[in-house]
Image (cartoon, rainbow, N blue to C red):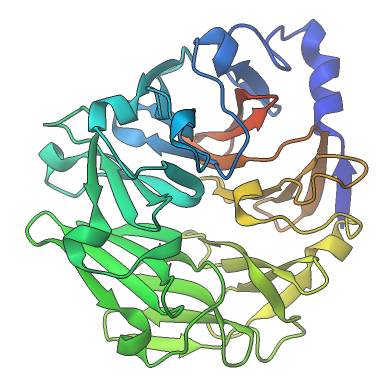
Length: 419
């Protein structure tokens, strides 16, 4: 069964009780339980505006200090050196329960990057907390430069200011795009698509070896890909979803410690051919073993390939199931997935076509812990967004979304309690 709900309408109804609901001039004191509250970082925290362009927003949580972080490009987003301001990449953060946001210019701390800036729409961010190595704990952004180099912006407990490293130059790997990443134990894994031939490459970091590069397509004997891959882990399993250029199917590379295997997960399903660059994401639920890959087909419809045992896969047309087949499927910078500790899954998808009417619907597709699906709708022209979750206590989870609205950066959060 599926339900369609107007989330923003619910938020407006609750403004009598919760003054922070909607786009506010001050940050919310705390997330609403069961509904979203929001803060305008540009107004409330004085953060620089976010101009339009080939950009995006990154978001992540750092559980060791109960921190939430949002990064975006405030300048250096156009192919024009005169557009580059002093702030560059901005990182806004809040800690604890107060939701008071502050911001810093990561670019000012890290120093010069590529001449024409970064493309955060093709980038990832994550916390790095290697077991037993508290000194290495920090935040990492893996960012595509306008020069198609893969760059790393990072902090650590011993070096809290932002630093910048050109990983392409450091490792001798090819120029790339379509960046995805995951952390397993002490190792950071960054996967991307080579701009030279479409091969899948992996950059691996450990505190003892530094960064190393390897060609996954050669290592696994797989074909090259047209679109952005998506990677995650489930226990000891490393998983990379990609579109196989040879058969135009969705494949999954899996490594459980005994070498990589290539699984054509859409081959024996009713899945449609994926449309170029339209692999939206992958998530893996450790409590159930469920793995889900979302993608867009050649008819611009949103699909999900899922499996609970890692061997048998089924395809679900989410556009038909949740009744939004009239809206085109988004490009990755207008979509994001979040996995909650209570077992719920959320897929946020914004708009792809700026000339589409009605403009800018943001769909939030939810699958709760019991498998029930429903859809929320916002009537906003949201072009760039990210979603992530943070666990803020025993049986308390918070979902965060950040997006650009009229050059302002808006952050919304919703607290979910579960048993």
